Image (cartoon, rainbow, N blue to C red):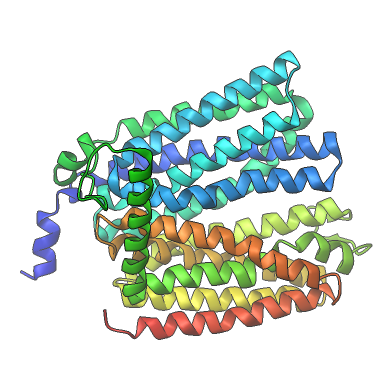
Length: 446
């Protein structure tokens, strides 16, 4: 019998992993949907009430940057402590502050500053939860199931991108904000319930039940310590995680590939509003079942096209991809191909001769994005030591999250001095060397 087959038979994760994965995926689906609906509702309420670009900028910063910062420490926490608890507790804290904000709106003493505080706490919670979720998957799923589970996760995320904005738009018009906020509380409780039912495989139960053993800190001690010792230990964890990830060519490829793609291609795509208003203003498109006439119609079609593409790409990877993408080399080559496809489609978005062609390329861009995400997550899970998985995901979340706003600092001013289409072309072309770099790392022996 082949050695890999023997290892598979001896892996405790093989027994009942479909049930564990289903519980996690369903729980996260509820949690993501509720959080996204509320996030959209809060942002749109700010826009409608304040009508200020600065207030929207601050809302975006409070809603995004804390997650990137906290992920720096969330990764080591996922390696050091109980991952299941790190998934559940942020949901409960976020639900509690959301209830407080709901009460504030219902009683009339809500303010913009209070909203920003709640956005900050919600975002920070994501910085702890996201690395924990991604690190938890290889704890409960055998290696052969990782690509399938990650791809289904991508499908759920894409479906959420489709449903959340539409549901939020309807709810904002028919219900007060305080009642909409309670949706997130309900879905968080449901999500926590599903995760609570997950029984850990015997191999990991001894570690996970009581929390992960804390590695020694710089003073050679473990366990409880003062704030400065904890801070030193966290930075030591970060340094170790960075050295570990950069020392593995496959991990290095997906982390730097993700970050640089967010910097080069994802940042220009956040200028879609400008592209639509400048290039397609006054140009209608009748698709038969809908007529796109206003700027909001076209923006909605753009979001819908991208989400449909990601949904199709995730479905493709969860069915056909799992049959052919076995092993880190093949998966990293697919990541490189996906990054190249992202770059080419971003160029296409800038050069599209009409709105119909633009929307077709938009769907293909979504497919390309999904082709990257599943193998990226699988490589980080399967090729990371169990004690390093959280740090690897924390590093990836931090670099990719910061990549987009840093890219915006460059591409947004350029859009005011050169045609907006050129910005898309430049971002897409600069992404192609990133794909080549990732491909070269797939040839490096570990």
